[in-house]
Image 1: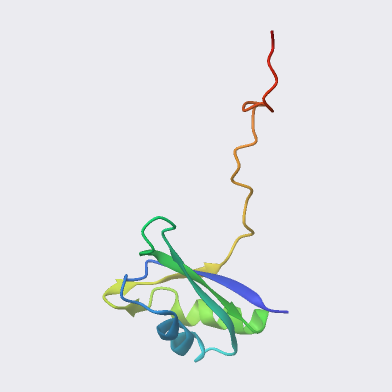
Image 2: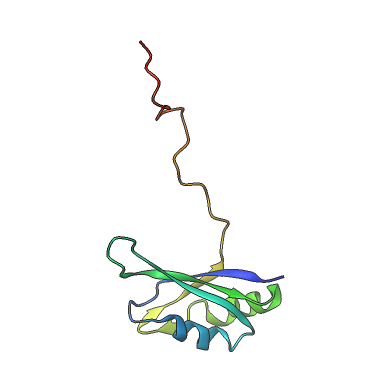
Length: 100
């Protein structure tokens, strides 16, 4: 089973190919995705790398967490599941019904 890693503190010059090459030193890289700002299209300084197995993912964490790339020290850890960011708390934002 693959393992998805969060990679943070990337320089804005870092490319997906850079990460692919770096993380392939620890094992099979299934996918690389850099996160960009949806309005400007510019990099946001973090991304995700999916490794082929949990063992390869853990090896990548221990090998690259704190490694300096492009003058910045990388943060590498296991990606947490994406949380629902719709703000569905407290019962606000009704369905268009009038209370009168």
